Image 1 (cartoon, rainbow, N blue to C red):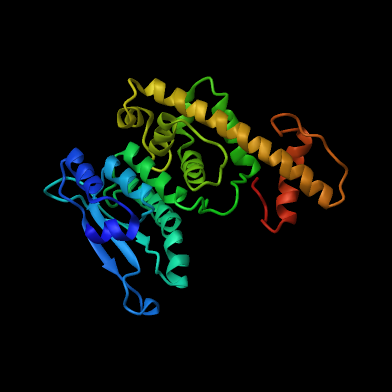
Image 2: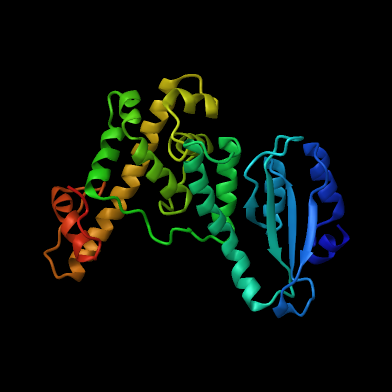
Length: 293
């Protein structure tokens, strides 16, 4: 803790206060160095049982998540996590590597959530998982995916159908694969600057990457009924469809001008008949292959 106080400006009392508030032991702290740094400590690691309070505490100090244990600690029931931070005397290679830890961890964690739906490793509760993803992809502002989500015409049509559904329970059950893709796109930053409320983000992760049914998702995020969960998913689909429509409208106009095609005005939602007709050929011209049936 003395080293932590000197290296990162964190007071030892702050660490102790955070630990006492969460009723867990002090986290394990580790110092490390690389050959490039000549043996002088260049990075600091903290290992602890994952809780919302401790995750916020260490992320605010500039630590990035690096590892999450596959199974809970048998004594505390918590998943152990390791977060790292480069110190002031870190070499160039380490300073370039540490900022990439968060987005890299976030993408692995999204894959883990998918595998858990099929019986894989343990994951934290959905609200905590959302916080962990936010910390992962928000560490450096990196979107992780690097490119905005650009659904093909079929997925866009399915998204719009769910957004305008008269029977969201039924349509939600038949859109689980689409919700998984939407969830991954949102949490990796590919739908930026779209921002959902915390309850909606929790619901999207539960219904998307975790592939929970409406009733299971409602129980998972604390909603009173499956109908409320289905209506929430419908609302999320509407927000995503409007966002994607605006992005596709702008991309269509810019690409059409670059190709020397006649200008076509897109409506407010960015989804004109001309845009729909051009989606597939434009996608092909950009080297993406057929966009769908």
